Structure formats: structure tokens, C-alpha cells
Amino acid sequence: MAVRAVRGAVQLERDEAGHMDEQVSELLTAILERNELTTEDLISIWFTATPDLHSDFPAAAARKLGIVDVPLICAQELDIEGAMPRVVRVLAHIESDLPRSEVAHVYLGAAGALRKDIAQ
Image (cartoon, rainbow, N blue to C red; front, top):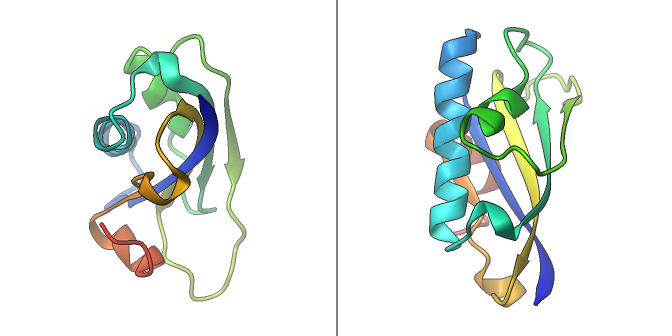
């Protein structure tokens, strides 16, 4: 079994804890489903949030989904002029037999514009 990395992102409509929880949960669920993963396949997850998000930690949504024994960390994304606002990004390290070229990276909604080079 190989160690792989899977990326994802979602843009929030507003900076509210409940909304962040809902959107990050949807993103994590999509990452797991599209890559046929269970929580046992997760090694660790990095979350970043743009500087305009203050309402909650994105990792809190993972804990509510039952991802309780996987190391999680949150960090602030760089504050780049003109960057898309209210974005949570994910970098998950996984164990998978998928070839690197078949890992499904997930960019939901407007966040799809961040990585037009990755087929959704």
C-alpha cells in the first residue's frame, strides 16, 4: 500500500461556524467517497483557511464526522491580494493502492476555479 496525498477545497458563502462545518463535512465526505476511502485509510489531514475565516476550526468538522484518531492541523492560508475569499483547503495523506494519477482531488463549487487543471 502506498502513501498518497489528496487535495481539495471549498469556498464558503459566509463566515459562520455551522456553515463551515457543513461545507467542510461535504468536502471531506466527497474526498473519501470519490477515492473509495474509509477513515482507516487516513494518515493525517492539513487544513488551511483564508485569513477572512474566523468562526471555527475546519478540523472541528472532521471530528464531528467521526475522524477522531487521525492527526489534524489547521493553518492560515497566505493573504494574497486578489485571491479567492472564504476558502478552506485540505491536504490529506492517505494509504491507497490507487496510482497517483487516479487519486481524485475534490474542488467543490466555486473552488473548482482554483484548479482548472484537475479534472473534476
